Length: 128
Image (cartoon, rainbow, N blue to C red):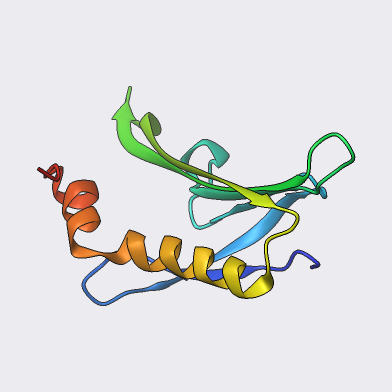
């Protein structure tokens, strides 16, 4: 699928649609950035990668990552003072049926929205 800008809602009480534009596009790894901040070091980014099955490996590999710089002030100038990251990797057997790939996708997307995982992620409240 050809890379194009994508819109993703942020986490505010009234979500704002943020546009991430392609920055680097290759079949193996594509990155998208939110260009609202002028300095690249302050721009959140989303990456996605894909590696097809081969004769040596009967699985496809898909990954998704988010990098979110934490902005602070250093010597009177806005600068990244830390960075938060999320990375996920999928290993998909070549023999997996499309219906099962749809289930896997749904479990990942819906699982990340589950209240238990959201409390751990947002509120730093572990599951026990």
